[in-house]
Length: 169
Ligand SMILES: Cc1cc2nc3c(=O)[nH]c(=O)nc-3n(C[C@H](O)[C@H](O)[C@H](O)COP(=O)(O)O)c2cc1C
Figure 1 (tube, rainbow, N blue to C red):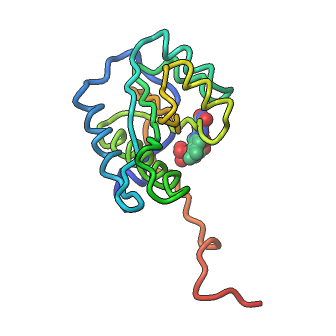
Figure 2: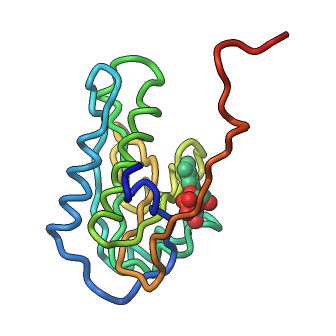
């Protein structure tokens, strides 16, 4: 298994240290490299590094408080104008978001997936905070930073979740 897959953890504490722009771009490049249905690539990104906006984003819901302590937050958006097959975009954006997390680990950073979509209230809150136009749907917040917390391997393997051929009835 790839080391970044093994070791990736949701990191929720961050050092007060700037993250290099080149690293953020590498992370976003990884997001854009994700597979998507019909290669629609229906994603867009906002890089938020303004402390007032980070503070506002951290109030999105009760599990987003750590966003205010991150030096940077990538807001992952879905672009409705790029939707080709109904509903497939949700899977496309999931693949893209996982790539952002894995490349963050590769860059020596800590990151966390903070859910926004599908709760309308949360989608609207993020939209209002960042003046996001109607054709773009806020999907997730990814706070990223250097951290004292380490990305470490936790074994999640569970043989009971593997099935072969068909279920017996
Ligand atoms: C769709 C989704 C939404 C999530 N939302 C949040 C969230 O709002 N806040 C948070 O702190 N973690 C959130 N997480 C992170 C999970 O809590 C975390 O992945 C899980 O506890 C397993 O820990 P690990 O990522 O370190 O393996 C989310 C993860 C996913 C995939």
